[in-house]
Length: 430
Ligand SMILES: *[C@@H]1O[C@H](CO)[C@@H](O)[C@H](O)[C@H]1NC(C)=O
Ligand SMILES: *[C@@H]1O[C@H](CO)[C@@H](O)[C@H](O)[C@H]1NC(C)=O
Ligand SMILES: *[C@@H]1O[C@H](CO)[C@@H](O)[C@H](O)[C@H]1NC(C)=O
Ligand SMILES: *[C@@H]1O[C@H](CO)[C@@H](O)[C@H](O)[C@H]1NC(C)=O
Ligand SMILES: *[C@@H]1O[C@H](CO)[C@@H](O)[C@H](O)[C@H]1NC(C)=O
Image 1 (cartoon, rainbow, N blue to C red):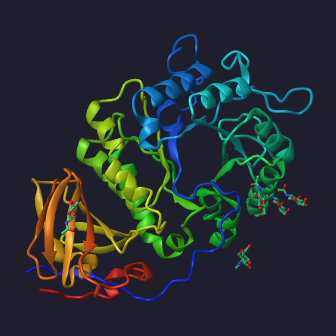
Image 2: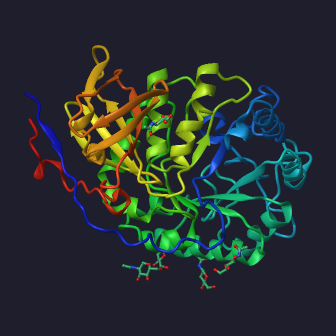
Image 3: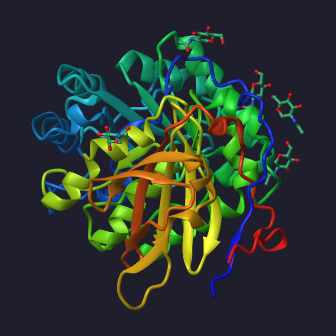
């Protein structure tokens, strides 16, 4: 006998709060960001191929065009910390490290633009960046102007070395400074991540200010890191999910697919769940040297289509069943994406009975099911009573899309799942 624990709380949600009005990030941002893979490697004498230098971004831009990344939708080539010179210039302007960026950022932006891509840069709301380079506190207008003049397209604004009581004000001031430049610059914030220890962040204000925002810890190249990000997201989903929508997204941090720490099943889990979470898809890996399977996964157009779905609703954890976590995301055209993560990290593949997913109710009376991961497969027409089983490897994820086949289906995108707290609202099915 199995105990199926789930709840499906139905209530209509109003539209997400007003998004930052800069016309950007209408679907989650896609691109590449150096931090997780290349960190603060500034030693270009010993490690010229991997140090933070203009060469690195030029090479990534070249590969992104040549190897199908751009075509798959990855657009932003993003610099993280450790690009600047340790001092501002005599006019108080940030400048790139002259040895590692001899051409300067403006030239680099031109190079990236000439490939049809966009350039992202990094700065910090406080007095120093996290790695100790000059921060933007007191220089928001100057730095925004500098980035705009250089032709930068995205700013990741970190939150180190900032008085927490002024954090929100700092992020809002920079948002205004970016707007004042007149250049469309996508604004990626870490406001809630730094504010949580002080108080519950105001996600309405955050959505008005930023195009995406980090909530929880930095990702690292390990399955335990991915699991803890998912656990945090599930624990706080009632707070953060309603704030996501076109123009503004929760950011669970970079994709580490194609590096060293995740098995292929775990890489599929990250890809599937980042699609369900409507997360920015910012890869941090070495695109010059990536295994074909990881590349194929990162370029999987069916998964990317779920991530980029125009309805723009973030998915939820909807059930915990027999050491499976079920996450579901409403999609356009009344469709639904279901991700089934096998949390049992022992043994072999285990079967999940699809009707145990709360969203399976769209199959009343009939639905058309497509498996997206691990392999693309047409699973055909199913009914609400179907005994369909999907097999999932340990720490892997099966990703499905379901399309209802009758006019009598529920209006799924008017529903919201809530998970407060699971064990208080059990439904025993069998
Ligand atoms: C600045 O903000 C205004 C009003 O919110 C908006 O209409 C405009 O497009 C913004 N400009 C830029 C460059 O983001
Ligand atoms: C932070 O700012 C508040 C309000 O301006 C001030 O009272 C406090 O002393 C500051 N804290 C630090 C550590 O600077
Ligand atoms: C934000 O801008 C306001 C208005 O100009 C100013 O009073 C305040 O000091 C600024 N705060 C920060 C952290 O820059
Ligand atoms: C949150 O921010 C919004 C928009 O800026 C504001 O209207 C609202 O009063 C704030 N809520 C709280 C609890 O501070
Ligand atoms: C079911 O979906 C597949 C795509 O996975 C499509 O090719 C097929 O035509 C659909 N079948 C029906 C009955 O809608």
